[in-house]
Amino acid sequence: MFGGFFDKLKQGLSKTRNTINDAVTQVLKLAVTIDDDLYEELEEVLITSDIGVETSVEIIERLRKKVVSERINDTEEILPAMKSIIMDMLGDYETSIIPESTPEVRLVIGVNGVGKTTSIGKMAARIKNNNYKVLLAAADTFRAAAIDQLEVWSNRANVDMIKHQEGSDPAAVIYDAVQAAKARKVDVLICDTAGRLHNKKNLMDELGKINRVIDREYGEAKKETLLVLDATTGQNAVIQAKQFMEVCPIDGIILTKLDGTAKGGIVISIKHTLNIPVRYIGVGEGIDDLQEFNSRDFVEALF
Figure (tube, rainbow, N blue to C red):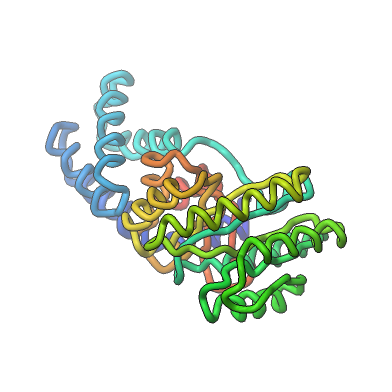
């Protein structure tokens, strides 16, 4: 993933890096010894970088133990120690936008404005460019512009789309999309669904119905639910994720707009507090700016 991808990630994380890395470096430069004051200052830096209180406290707690167990007495060794702790928290996993097995259904959920439709379009383009057959389902039928917006992306990515009228039953759209996917021997069916969190009961019923249709009509397909979150909202993204977890199980997160924020530390907070992996990240406006998340590259790009 190094080379072009890593450079793009590094560039996309520049605002976050300027916040975290510069502040940590500054604190360590001024520190004479490794003491409680140093730990407190580092904890403050992490909290203000949107890593969240709970996660920041945990990082510093682990750092204290590491300093003792590895007999670290030079402040220059603190940053590498922190990097390895964060790496450990994120887990060393790799993920791929390209399907491991086909057919596959990806249900994409998220509130309005987080970049859900854009992420679907970018994902579709990437899969299509790797010679897989992709179909989109416009099952976010309650928002006026959602179907039109998805259509724009289906044209950009040059993939087919199944849609009904605005206000239709989302499960009926999914039913038709599944039949089309089977008939056309589609590799990946990507479903855009509504994200009306303010009405959790309705959303739960709707997603339950959609899942039942997929299980009944397309049992042979691998299915996963991806939640789209906007990195610029910081800790609010974690709250949103918790609310969605009450509605349905989530397999992974697509974190958008990482390039436009200094709150990239949210990645660490999401993994630690919710134990859901960040699978893909958006680091730009272009159609190829949705990337696989690689924890090692992320930590390297952050510091």
